[in-house]
Image (cartoon, rainbow, N blue to C red; front, side, top):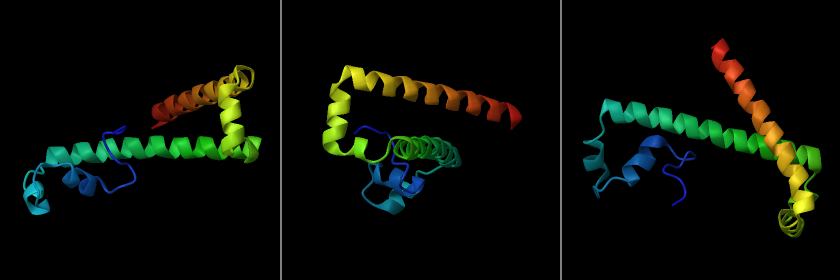
Length: 109
């Protein structure tokens, strides 16, 4: 499994599914306020990261069009250093700008 949680699922449902207890009621008996608070924070952070990824893909499609993301074109792009390097630089710049924006927002809030 690549992720420790499923940000597309309800936190409690995902947590119950991962508990050793077969019966959801038994799993719920082990849920504490501390666990519930931690789940809320973890899923909130994971959801924000998923939304950021979606927005980045939206921007890439808006900037580059859909043709570059079709399987054959994407495979050629990823296999080519000369084509991938400019895209990596652009993505790195975007990530750095987003990080700076997040830092500014945290200062404001």
